[in-house]
Amino acid sequence: MAKKRSALVGGRRENRVEPPPPQVNSASGRRNLVVFFIISSIIATVAYRFRQSSPPQYQELYVYEQGLVTIHANYQDVLTENSKVSENTSQRHYNYPVLGYITPWNSRGYELAKRFNSKFTHISPVWYDLKSQQTSLVLEGRHNADRGWISELRKSGEALILPRVVLEASPAVLLGKEKQRNKAIKLIVTECKEMGYDGIVLESWSRWAAYGILHDPNMRNLALQFVKQLGDALHSIGSEKISGQKLQLVYVIGPPSSEKLQEHDFGPKDLETLSEAVDGFSLMTYDFSNPHNPGPNAPLKWIQIVLKLLLGNSGSRAQSLTPKILLGLNFYGNDFSLSRDAGGGGAIIGRDYLALLEKHRPELQWDKNSGEHFFIYNDDKDIRHAVFYPSLKSISLRLEEARSWGCGISIWEIGQGLDYFFDLL
Image (cartoon, rainbow, N blue to C red; front, side, top):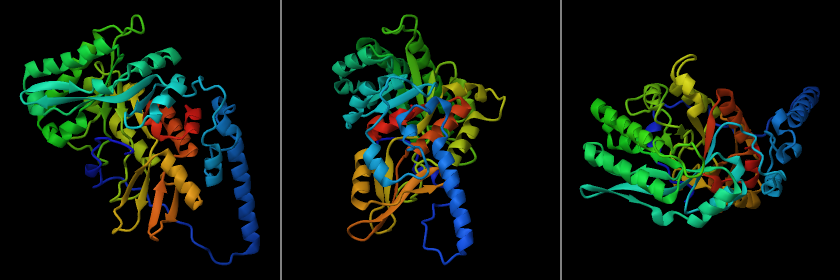
């Protein structure tokens, strides 16, 4: 399984901002020969300049030296170069916070976290769930925790370890009673102390939205107060790793479901309310499309709209909180069936993508509207598919977008990507 997220994908489909769908090039008619050569010359010149120009901080990176960060990507280069990176894997090139998620069902992420530890400021293994047990609460997941890996990670870099905790507990049980809220916080703080974590990543907003409690002003206030109380409790505890540093809280938030904020959306006022208690907001800017609505994973224009909705106008209080936003980058993709009778398709990870390239040897096409590469193929049953998977160019554009805002980034999840992606971080 490529990913387990709780984003409100289904609720985002109506009234969403749709970029025009990518168009598959068809054979064109006979053109004037002179015009053809003029256009070809212009394209060649632009392509050359594009491949030769790169941000100054990236000029010595392998992927730029080889001209791989380009809209003119091809499957041969991906298959040949995907495992190659610059010799110096310890140097960071993205100077804002970088959080990488790791899942226990994908062991490759554990290895990549060690190899590229210095690229990250935070590593979040997806280990814990806080659940209701009759009228009580339990924190499950310590069996997932790998102490040996944690020890190796500590030795190989400075990344903070903040395991993710998902609040599965019923809001009626968790939020309705002060005693239960206090117990939940104590369970989390105690686990951090006993395991030597640097804090946690908390995911709860999408769960609360699914329960329908965020429409109720009183319950919404209790929900926000719980997050604030948890943040304050973590900030009262010193980190075992770094003298003088407190435990941190990163909070997971989904993107608004339309161009106008809905009642269940996490918006600028919520951001301001939690600003003092939360150290970072992991913004899930991916899963824009799904098997019922095939298309890009995270259109760049949509990302820009989401940031504007969340952060408000220039000069607003929310705008000043931009450094705490961790813009979501997907390291997975999607293989969509374009036949309504074929099941729709679903998520793919790096090895799946490479296998498809090896088998079908497709032409990689650039969709300028979304800022993503894709390709089309027919499977063994002659069913047509569209495959969207991150490329060096699509990732570099999103890093530049985040940098222009002054945002950090959060990656779901590092084990699903290709090695040379990390050259950009």
